[in-house]
Amino acid sequence: MTTTEIAELPLLEPGSPPAELDRLRELGWAARSERGLEVLRHDECHAVLKHPLLRTRWSERLDAFELREGPVREMWDRMLISSQGPARKRLRRPLSRLLSPRTSESLRDVSREIAEDLADEIADGDTADLLEAVAWQLPPRMYCHLVSADKRFAATAAALSDGIISPILTVDLSRQQESVDALIEARRFAAEHIRARSAELGDDFTSRLIREQEKSGLSDAELVDEAVTLMAASIDNTVHQIAIAFGVLLEERSRWESLLREPGGVEAAVDETIRLRPRFGSILRVPIEDVDLFGVHVPAGSQVHVNVRAAQRDPRAFGDATDTFVADRQSTGQHVMFGNGQYSCIGRFLARIEVQECVSVFLERFPDLRLDGDWTVRHTPVVSEVTSLKVRLR
Ligand code: HEM
Image (cartoon, rainbow, N blue to C red):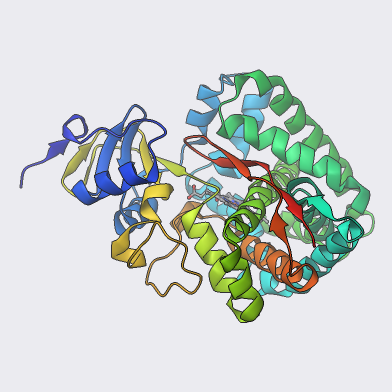
């Protein structure tokens, strides 16, 4: 069988619209771009995500962000997101246990209560900023609930999560110092919080991590890292996916109205918003040795980008009209956005529940909800960030 080199594949230009992704995906399962190989089809994306020789490589993101050395780089290099092999298993297990499907499901009522509180807080006005007053509020309040932190810490937790993660994922070098300061401040909070909870262990996630510390062989510094990982990973991404869900459901009123008639359809409709407009546009993998991927030679150390935006519109997995929103889409496809295998998103069950409950509560409380002007999103190669989402409540 002949092997194709990456350079022989069709070129995907940066920022290409969905129609171009569709065109290239129909030419073949992969394309090349200025960053490396782009995997465009659903099944091949999942195979790449689970491939034993393809690794996540946070260090590449830190290098691109010009955080190549120093104490903050060392902190990152020790964390779950950077680790591999047995160290990865040891660091991942305690967090995975905290966020099992069952525990996540048990947090559905909490998600709902937080969403109800947020609805109460905006209920007196005729208009609202759904991005600031709702999407930016729910995940940090959930985080405070998870770790049993004072609710007043939510705003700081949101700013820290965004400050740590967003500048790196969007490669915004003007925010480098903010990212460094946020990581240091998050560690300071986590260390202090762990000290406080150690004196009075409860059933919250911090207490459970403290109890697990010895069993999992976590050092004191690693325990702090786990708590920081939870804060950084649980807030920023979920904020944007909540905002995206409302944006997609409201940009055509018929979508919102069909859910008003069939509230049981929220789960499927939320999944469809995630499919069509994923927060993550791509996920990075790097082969540790030369590999042959479906007939393409991929050299060790090259960048392989699982192109979520293309894969989640693959008709082979998601059926007809994949550029269209179909609230009750019946398909065999699995989201690519949360990854798969040993690096997959630990919070994927909880994240979906938070979005679902928020939408569900707002359907009940504000049936006349509609966009007040356009909602806006900034797309970067790795993530999409909602920048404005104003609504009329009645
Ligand atoms: C809609 C919201 C979310 C999105 C879009 C998202 C997306 C992702 C993605 C793309 C990854 C990397 C997957 C890979 O490389 O294969 C990841 C990892 C991770 N996520 Fe999420 N996530 C979300 C919510 C959450 C929540 C709510 C939590 C925790 C409560 C969480 C915790 C984590 C952790 C700990 C990792 C690191 C896993 C590892 O390196 O082993 N995420 N997430």
